[in-house]
Image 1: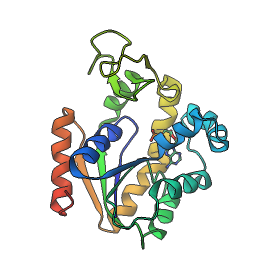
Image 2: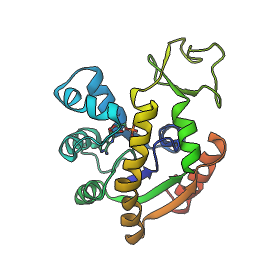
Image 3: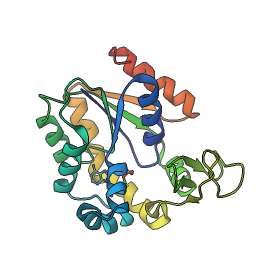
Length: 215
Ligand code: AMP
């Protein structure tokens, strides 16, 4: 079964998805991570997606369907935490159509104020080696530009630059927000306040999963 973790770019979905995966026995599936891997290895999908992602726009539903099939796999027993999908109502319906093997049992909205999102995204830095995420002001590394975990060098994601951030937030408002309503109507929606430390937010998410006996 699938728990969808949804919310605006910068809400902290990736970090929280990692914590839920390691502490609550879920396998994290991130369509953004999968796409970035395709870009890195310069696969056909990667070549088609790279420029679209850098602009902060959405990659086509067809490509995402391929990614989704590849990433979800055939095992109905798995607890999957889905980060970054669905990003529009058509994708939510596609996911619903896979419900025999992978039913969505809960969609958690990690909710963070718009002003906070811009701060979080523009200061975010990612290790080019191990993928760890830091923030220049909120969670700075000991040595500037160097990953605390592995010593790799930190980079800014191309889509965290100002112009792309603006596009991503507006795409979220116009295209992804209706997905919340889709799950609300199905009785699968829960909202978690994304303010606070990563540990504080994690315990709120954990409580949401607990209510359904999912941890
Ligand atoms: P993320 O890491 O989830 O912020 O995703 C990074 C970028 O990958 C997004 O800005 C989109 O360009 C693309 N992407 C990831 N997931 C999807 C999706 N479900 N639909 C369309 N594009 C996606």
